[in-house]
Figure (cartoon, rainbow, N blue to C red):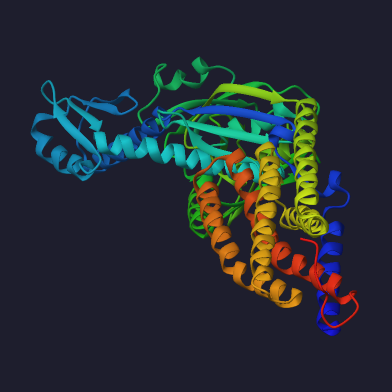
Length: 524
């Protein structure tokens, strides 16, 4: 008996000690959510038309290249809307050849004949819906990666809104709101394109050789001048580049802050295997030409290709050290598939969190005090057993939350209060069962043992049912609901330990101090 009691007491002491060590001091060990710590609450809308426009423009480039390679004559291919483009004046005698080439895009686009030799292409309705859904999902995943690299504790990034094109972002503890917004919203579309003409000081000078018109398959992009020098203000220059990018951000393997040849902040990048193969080919075939490094439709630099390059490059420009770090972050996380608009922005101050904490602690303390008084009044000395078990339960709950890195939210505090109620419920079941066993004439030790043994399955059943409910809350709920589910789950698990193991050990400890082989009665 004594040996069994000793290892039980040691086990309880170890668990309590580790729990106290785990959450002490609470200000450093317990992570607080947005509603308690303060931070940023954002609602963004994904401009899903951008995803349609990218798909349409990509198809235009592919169709133009295939028609030119096949020698099919046409006047122009123009973007009509994000989901539509028009091919104008296809030569009559080459119309069958044109249709054969155009049929390769029929899985995504419908084709309608308008005037003679003119065709309107439009993305199918089902494909439009798919592209819009994918753009929202990709935007959410990209924002998640960026926020995670910011080091924000327990951020919330979730799709929201009836239209299915909105994203909720909550960043607990963030103080530099402007930087967080810029990192989240930055498209960070990286493209490497061959320069056909430029740099030039004006658009007119750049297009002088082509009578002021942009040649088919080309585009004009602004950027910094090649005469940019360290310490000097950047000058705007114009570049004529191919619309089709040789390398894009999808080919990146990594990006990191570095220094350029002038010892100024820059961003170095490395390419994956497929990107490296394309990079070797494009640089090997175009030695002596310029390669524009374009970020979000702005030429950051346009170095001359001096030799074949394998799998690494560098983006230089007028970066600060912080800008280089942020650009590396967004490049690593991938480009957003579409631009974002801010619909709602709320900055929650820590004072609101402090008020919530005080109110929550007051409610929990008041509830615990009332429960203690009731248990002591109704069950007398056995009530002390229940009170100690509940206090140990709360210690274990805090300790486990700190060990697991769980975030405490305002609904989480409600989970604390519910844990107190579950602890009381378990002890009431045990005490009432012990009373019934004692009324049958059993001895105290036998009655207590039978009471715990017979109530165990009931306690297990109720806690498993509650755990299933908590699992559904965590799976399908958003941030505050998940905070409640997390606290409730940990509280239920610790409550089984305290109600069955700790409470029984306390009874055993009291009985071991009674003289004689069997105590006459126990206050319950």
